[in-house]
Image (cartoon, rainbow, N blue to C red; front, side, top):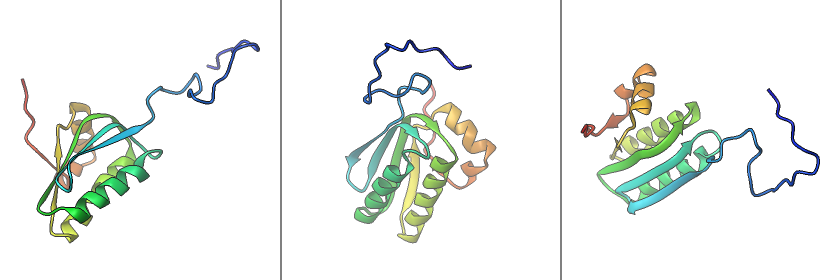
Length: 128
């Protein structure tokens, strides 16, 4: 349902429209170059390109296992899943392994429903 906005309301280009969530960004942190990368925020069609670039670079500069910490991801859509699978395949072609760390339960369920849990390997979760 549309909301009425007063005509004299200030609109700022720095802020998302009123009906969109505030956090649309993806934050990428290289914790150990070529070995550990952390993704936080939203992995969606809007952010998948920057995530892909970071994963391709990490695969190119490292060796053995690449750990991708996704504990800080709020959302993963179909394009985000596709990017993770693509990075997994690139890692295999580079004789490396991509492992997900800190998979949130909602994303774990998504991987199970899409059967990508059979393709993407995750570290054993630490449950408290």
